Length: 241
Image 1 (cartoon, one colour):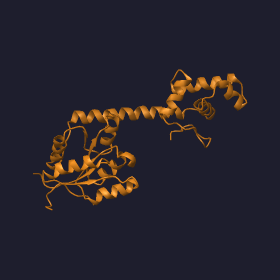
Image 2 (cartoon, one colour):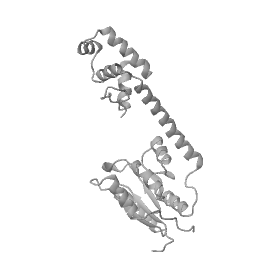
Image 3 (tube, one colour):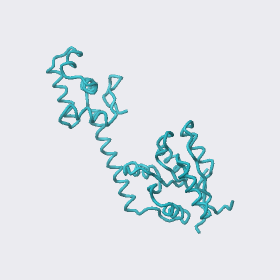
């Protein structure tokens, strides 16, 4: 193999797609290899399998099936000096923006023609930008906005007192105020006051919405009684041309 050839690893749990793309790249004199995730392997093992191919560029799917979320590989590969381009079937712009924030160079829809994906690889080989700056910036903005919303949500749940967190836990279990009062040996008025406080702190107007928000945030009641957060060697690119 010539030292000037671009080495590419196609990482996808769909072997037919990965092999077809690799063939399309080899036609362009690109040293393309596939890495198909083994469901029994850990992400650390998958990462080592990718690095073993000594790629300059990794074409990475985010949805690796039973293997899990390919996002877990992005920062490690990019941090090791390997270019990462996401080739995904997911339309989730926040997830795409997260990949860029973690070091991916570009995102390409898996539904795009192979010619478009191959063209992107050629741009990497020629050291050219892969995706329009405006599109990249918008994806990053979408991700950062979602992250800020998530931080705000965590702050709201963290503001709950221990008693309020206990009440919310009971509401999530489907219990009514009367039953909660009986179980806690307190008056119904006390529980209603605590429910109102929970709704105010979470910024919602109903118990149902509060419960839905808790499930959405995957909130878990605190277990320690202290807080109510509950929210859980680099290969150089070959010369251009």
